Length: 485
Image (cartoon, rainbow, N blue to C red):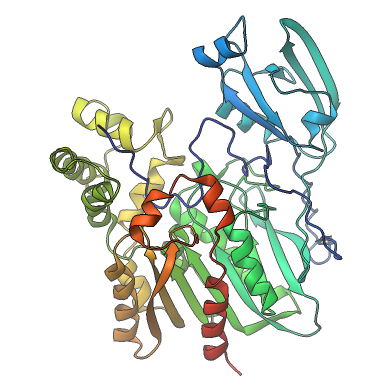
């Protein structure tokens, strides 16, 4: 039996057949409008250096499924064309124009709905105020629904003023979201760099671990800064996240970080970068106009990725219950695959010519046409092998906190994180701290131990209700200690 393997640093990516919830604001099961006494602020032209403010992305509010034989049979569908409406979010554009659960969408403004992911990529381009026409099938009858797109609900916070701003990216702009404490004066900053998936970090919902994590820093008086990836949320450019490689994306985060110098409420002497998962790879690679006071990483990698991925094949799959002999065969296959892919830099199309390699690529990397592997272009993964993170960490001019959760099964090796601290301390003695954190997994969920973390990895109900609330206070205590007074 093949045991599903987690792709490297999945963050909070949802690989079910529904629309990626956060990418297009398509559907949110949690409460969308958080009650708060404050309202979000959209940056003026002046505060955005005379850039025209980004329009709000459209809030669709629909959960979709590809129409399989079983879905067609259960719902008495006469055709497998289109995409099936599984549920709707109250207040979303789809509900407002009359879409109902059980409908089948055939087209949106003339764009044919062949399958879920291309369809959501299309409607993700819509903005607040755009006209929408859905051609649907309901009860065997074809009809059209028309209306105007509503904007995605902005974030609010009981602890901070929420500012929506932007930074230039190629021929467009990327959204930044800033939580500014209510108190006057300059404030220390937590600059967050998220994991690798192409999904929005805007209004993720009260049950998303990132929401609770970052809220903890707002409570401690920190400015909290999030940066969307290319094409995500309100961001607009000719390329989106899936087409952007590792170095380009890191440059985007760098540009957002360097923009902090424009805000009069930021204490530039006390800016901290927090990289989670793939963000922990990118954080030491960023090009800083001014040095951060500290860098925090959680659940990341420092060794060359060929080495990490080989170890992942053996150890992670054994954690997930794969048979020892099956694991041994897969491990042998992975050595050949990763050497050709990561070291020799063969493309997926080249690897697909070898049936043995094609089998591995299909089972473990969700390969799609156009060179996309696990939602990113293969050049993103190629560049990981050449990051030279030992050198990057040796040149970091900041305090470093390297954290590893004891329930970690994605970045599973605690020595990886201890090694980051050792490298920093070798070249900058006394600047780094390594800490193992009990009762937490890769996604900031409270777990008893590693075995428990593996058991609940797909239990969405447990994960929604058991976010670890102690991570932000622990990190904030460390930041307070190393802050420049």
